[in-house]
View 1 (cartoon, rainbow, N blue to C red):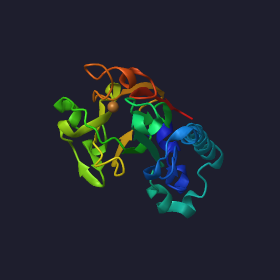
View 2 (cartoon, helix red, strand yellow):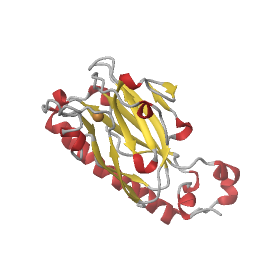
View 3 (cartoon, rainbow, N blue to C red):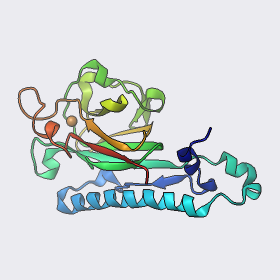
View 4 (spheres, rainbow, N blue to C red):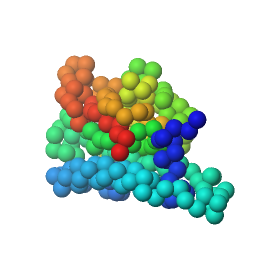
Length: 230
Ligand SMILES: [Cu+2]
């Protein structure tokens, strides 16, 4: 039995690729207040984009079934793409405070979302082996600089994007250098609407165990992933 959400995702064969939360070419991240402002603004735009898509589905209906016929039936579901950066404290002027940008964000419910994380951090924060394993993504895999992998050497992990409530774990390896970021891409199916806490499980913060500072501060190495129906 098709669900309401399943039906809404097809949009009658319209553009299958929607870009939300697109933060542009992250390899040229410059840091500073202006960039941070743009990121916040983009997050807001992402929410608007999701709302617009739902409205299109609502208003557009699914007419012309016979004309579209087979093409309509075969049209891929709307596929979202979400972009995050991991920047170092040196880049934001807050040494010792690496940060996911954005750290608090909204994604559509019950959707396939491809996430690209571009990490500029060239420092390792070794993790227990379990956090070197990719889980909860399509195929339990991620790509690292274009290459599909199911694990990352725990000693070479810089950060993880982990949502324990969803059994989602995405290790992010150290960047070759600050000028040559690690680009990690994964696809996951978002759950029903709600709020989910994500946490970096690599002790990249302050204090003797590395779990202080950014690791314990929302918007840095932990945050809220809001899953929304519109
Ligand atoms: Cu981290």
